[in-house]
Amino acid sequence: MLQVTCAIIFKENKVLIAQRSKSMKLPLKWEFPGGKIETDETLEEGLKREIMEELNINISVVEALSPVEHHYPDFSLNLYPFVCAYLDGKLVAREHAQVKWESLANLEAYDWAEADVPVVKELLLSNP
Image 1 (cartoon, one colour):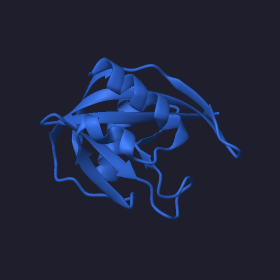
Image 2 (image 1 turned 45 degrees about the horizontal axis):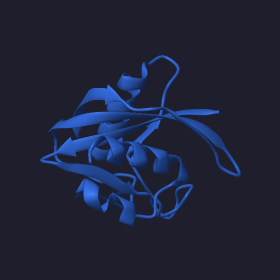
Image 3 (image 1 turned 90 degrees about the vertical axis):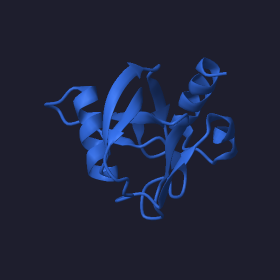
Image 4 (image 1 turned 60 degrees about the vertical axis):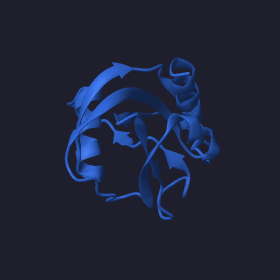
């Protein structure tokens, strides 16, 4: 069971979403960026590290949302989502096909990775 975090990063009332590359598992699906946690780090530390590695930006962790356990056909994961704030850095998509700032009202229009769907729903319920 993979231990994975994701960041719902807010900047100027928009949230950062990322499209997986063609070479990644779940190609071209949309997700909140994040990644696997190393054994020697907290969820928050791992999330900040992954966001810097993948996107070249610094974030602050604001609050945790509900964890998601999801089973894909070839792997399973525990996903730990966190609402975050953008601090600084020039956004660079190092691993994803594309990244973009999107309004909450438009999130349901995207083809999300299945594990991220409950996160989108919780986010929209808590931000009507």
